Amino acid sequence: MTQVIQQTVTGIFTGSLYGLMALTMVLIWRSSRALNFGQGEMATFTTFLFWAFVLHVPYAIGLILVLPVAFVFGAVIERGLIRPLEGKPHLNALLLTLGLFLLFNSLSLSVWGSTPHYFSTPLSGSPYHWLGINIPKYQLFVFICTLIATASFYALFQFTKLGLAMRATAFNKVASELCGIPTGTMLMVGWGLAAVMGAIVGVLIAPIATLTPNMSFTLLLLGFTAAVLGGLDSPGGVVIGGFLLGIAQNLVGTYLDDWVNFLHLPFDVTNPNAYKNIVATLLIILVLQIKPGGLFGKAERERA
Image (cartoon, rainbow, N blue to C red):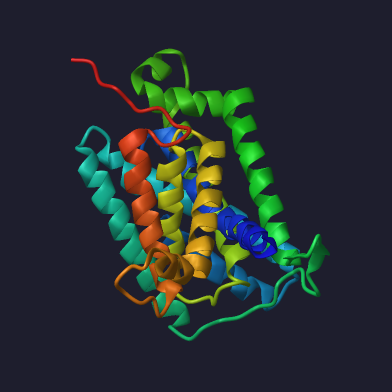
């Protein structure tokens, strides 16, 4: 039983990273009704900038320096690349974000190369022990950051004029403009804040993973999975989706071989961890069959 609890707790900590990446997608979705598949590579690029900063300045100062740069990246991309596609088919913007994926991946590879880069975690030392469960300090820190980010996003969209204006812009741009909302500014702010969150995700995951140009590729896919599971309209929902995904992956990686033997299935599992990403696909199929808008989202309906 202790092992099940340990794997569940570890899965929640792993899912925290998925939830943070999903939050960046929610931020763009709730402000502009768009998806940015270049978000992961933008996060990797700004993480490389952070790595370059911390070679010369303390960790905290490097983070303070890189976040405004990330905001400018996001705002400029929205103003210069996304906005000219306004009124065009949604597929155009989707293809453009795939182009951003290739662009920032190539930039990271060209500037810093494919050699892995490393830096130590801000929190180190022996893990906490509680009721027989090991809780690594840094993973606990990431989990707390996830909770803070979720609460901040909820407060932003529910209780601030900026958040309400961003939601109104995404819901009905024309009506928002008639009400005096600067919709162009709201869209830029949404993309800028999403880029800032992406940079934070990259900085948090880099000490755990190896910093390479392809560092965020898998994280982006799993973050998108968490967003679909939880519902793109629900910041808290996508974080819970990340937790569920992390738990499911950990349990499959630990117990799949036992389940196969118990059910007497006609195949051998030599590497249970290789099946982790299959779980993500199966979860999406299952949830969308039952709730098309995700576990905590609302399915959009169009009236003729």
